[in-house]
Image (tube, rainbow, N blue to C red; front, side, top):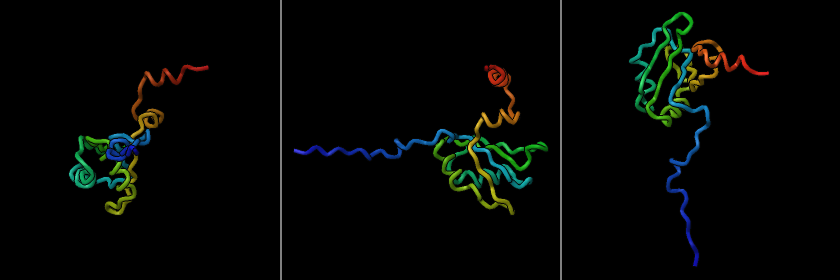
Length: 120
């Protein structure tokens, strides 16, 4: 008597995502005049979007954050939109990584500064 074991009926649920993958994407090299509507048109192809924030300060122009409802939609957007051509520019689409932004001082956090100050 042989037992047949079927393990791959739920492959989608068992795919492990890399640790940097998250629902928040950071986009660089955007045209300065891009609108929220255009951002929703481009990024909404990959799933429902929770929020879009386009940088409008001098040092954040040409950048945006896109927050997806679902992490797999965010991954699909990164996979398909990195290098996407918009108004003469090629998009740079990255996962938002809080540690990198805090080091640059973009989102200063006193607690993190204090932790970094300690050590021997």
